[in-house]
Amino acid sequence: MTRSAVIIAFSAACASGSPAWGQAPVCSGERSPLDTSVGNTPMMTLTLDGRSGEFLLDTGATYSAVDSKSFGMPAGASASLSGFSLPIATGGRFVAEDMGGYRAPAGGQRGRIGTDVLSLGVTEFHYETRPAFAVVGTATCDPATLRNAGFVEIGRYGDGANPGQGRPEPGSPRVPVIGLRIGLVAFPAQVDTGFDDERAPRVVQANGALIAKLRAAGVAMHPAKGPPTLGCGGRGISEYWQIDTASLTVRTLGGEPIGAYPPPVLQVKTDLACGGIARFDQPFGQLGASWLLRWGASVFDGPGERVWIRR
Image (cartoon, rainbow, N blue to C red; front, side, top):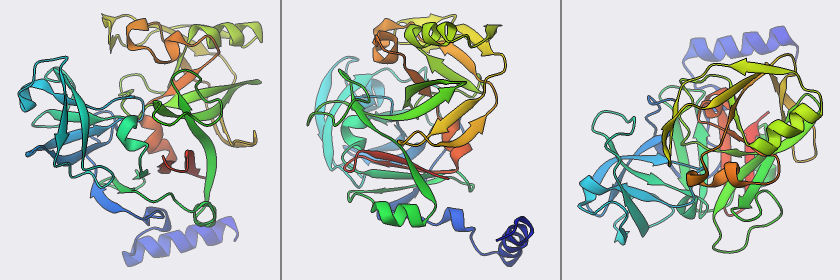
């Protein structure tokens, strides 16, 4: 198809009121609307233990949690809860946290679903339409079907001890890891859909090892300003660096560049209390929820241990 033909075809689809091709679910599962009003983070209305409210689908969290006040539990306690309306789990163990200070939709945040639960199934995000929606199911998504729908594989699941290196051990925390490149420096990056990066656009979080690798490779950067962040160790001022000219590239597992973005701003992760990439010895990055919007459609396949985005 020529460019003009593509534009004409797309315009005709919009004029007729028919749904755009990119909005059609690819994987099997239950379709649910998402509230993305808080920095594009995916919030879904769910019921757990007889209580309903907004739960964050958080691929950057290795355990699931509930709001201590809403569930009548002291902060720090954990309990096995059932009656879960999420299609991939009827219940599980949840840690109680005080979520009263979190940015959340009206009514507050009732809980957070981490990779201990999300990795049991497939979550297909669609941000190319409003309202955004997700399709959540238990069956792995057929790779051939995804490729025919225009998706390309960009990542796999890693574990806390050995992130992004091969198949995680059963029962280990599984976090989706994709491949990025700044200039000629390639590195892995976690995808954290719970990271509200709305106040820091174009930010890529980086650990100290990645900053050192970029500098050693001669990637020019200068200090930049950014908002303070609320980490596990409390609120603090983060260190920000603006890359001067090198673009940011998303790569397939084979190293093929499939999407280039302007020079990013790097936010240095130093909060050791949160764990994650700040503790890694190897260079590592992390992306926030705004990338779900940039990609439009993405698939996080827990059973297949694959991450896909539409090319």
